Length: 195
View 1 (cartoon, rainbow, N blue to C red):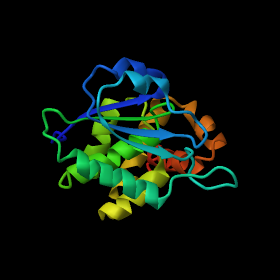
View 2: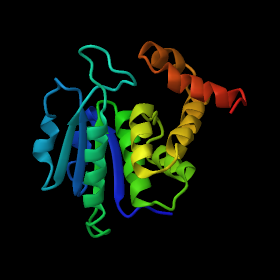
View 3: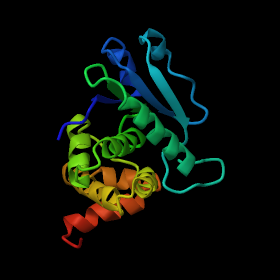
């Protein structure tokens, strides 16, 4: 099942390479204190939603993570996107590295646009577009609840964590140090055949 729009996922450093690809919609996810990337000055006309939060699973003082309001806004943006003619609909989602916040957000927008698609197929599509995806579980859990997916999207993300730990085992320590132990443990459980 193919989505009704083209997809690009990237990090800030890659934005300049996409300014002439005919992007119709941009979801820009930035840290709260980060300036708007200069590359957007070279993009053509497009609809844009900018969200600002850190790539975390738990809030800590001074480091706000994604909120339900943020997720509701990105889903509303996704509903606007699917009204665009399929031939011209091209969504670019970026965060700082194009790995976590952006891939989780893209997964939710795909799941919303293709309600009949199984969660595993949604995640497989995200991984096909961005092979280093490690979607933020907090974003997925909130969006999964809003879309009435019964936790399926969040569970399907565990398969991506497993995949990344298989081919990039060094990520475990990095993610744990970043406060992402819950995701690492979910991936490890699948590796060990425990879920």
